[in-house]
Each structure stands twice: as C-alpha cells, then as structure tokens.
Image (cartoon, rainbow, N blue to C red; front, side):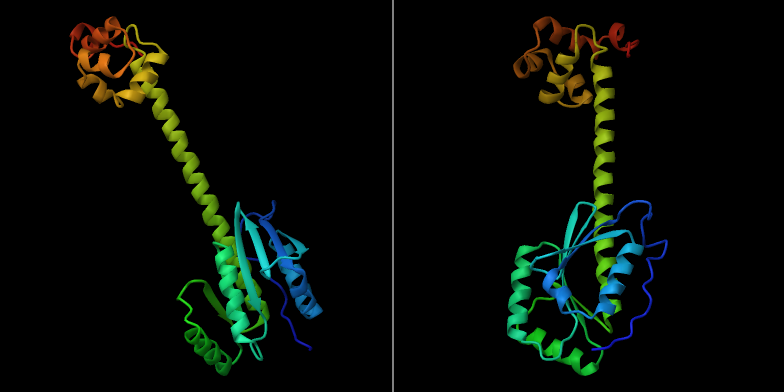
Length: 245
C-alpha cells in the first residue's frame, strides 16, 4: 500500500530537551514493524533520531515502550481501524492496561465513519474513560508524533518530580545542619546528644519547653546534661550569648 509521508520534524524548542544528550530509548515491537510500509518506518527512524531517541527493535507485547527520565510509557498503535476484530482488540487493551501503569492507545481514524465505529465499540465494551487513554489521530505521522510527545512529556514530568525531591532533600539536610549547630552550642551536648534530642524530642522549640524530668524520661542523656539544657533555654547567663559554629 503506497502512502505519502510528510518530512519528519523535531520538537519545537519549547517542547524538547537539549539534543546534546539522549532523550531516552524507544522500543518497537518487531512484529508491528513487519506490518508497516518502509516509508513510514523511515519516517519513524528519522523523527526519533532528530529528537534524540535511540530505537531498538524487540519482541515486546505493546507496539512501543518509551523509557524517558526513568519512566516507562507503553503504547498500542493501531494504524488501520478497518476490519479490526474488536473483541480481541479490547481484550489486548485490557491486558496491557493491567501490565503497564502508563499506557496509551493511539488509533488512526481519517474518516468520520471510522471515528463513529470506534466510539460505538468503546461504549459496547464498557471501557472506562481514561483507563487507558485513547488518542485518535488523522494520519500515521501525526499518530507517531503524538506518541513521542506524550512519552517525552511524561518523562519530563518524572524528571521534574525527581529534581523537586532532590531539592527538598537538600533543604532537609541544610535544616538538619543548622539544627545540629544550634543544639551542639549548648554546653555538654555533642553531636550524639543532638541526634538523640532530634529523634526523641524534635524541634528546638520543643527542646526549649522540655523539663529536666522529661528529658531524662525520653532520652539517654545524663542528669547533668539534662540540667544544662533546661538552664540554657531559661537562664540568661546561657541563652544571651550562645556560641554557634
């Protein structure tokens, strides 16, 4: 079957990462590849290369699996709706949905009749909206571009979440360092004692409000150290000029 394919174009600058490094890996099902026209396969190869994705042909269950930013996104790409055995199609969709947390179904539907047929079958087989997400497209190239952009976007979100967690951890470490500096400025309290207070009492405010008796009940600090801590937060001779650092 002869089809004309438009030239592949990379993402716009706003939608892509730097092409100086790989955006991820695209795994294509080997039997799906064997069913496609060489021109379309060439389009896929060029589009992936231009957007810094590495292509591997493997015997997998979905038609595509993208690994981007530590996240796997699976796709079923149906290039021709006409003559589809809808029962086996939805059975496969259900199976893949259970296997992959991030799964999309992309279908080329160039005519209104095909779109109506999909909607009818969607309702008939009781597919829940968004589980999985169906992506209807007008042509093959648009379908594959959608696949790559969805995978790229999901990977970018994953990377941003990872960066946010790293920044939160860094702030937590910095806060702990300040905490240790303050608590170890109390005469007689070393880093071990500061960690004990952090794990058992908690914040500096909570330590300041704790009595000597409570400190002895909840920590393994000595009576002398517990006495010093309570005096530190109550006696001007201690708290007016703490030495930190």
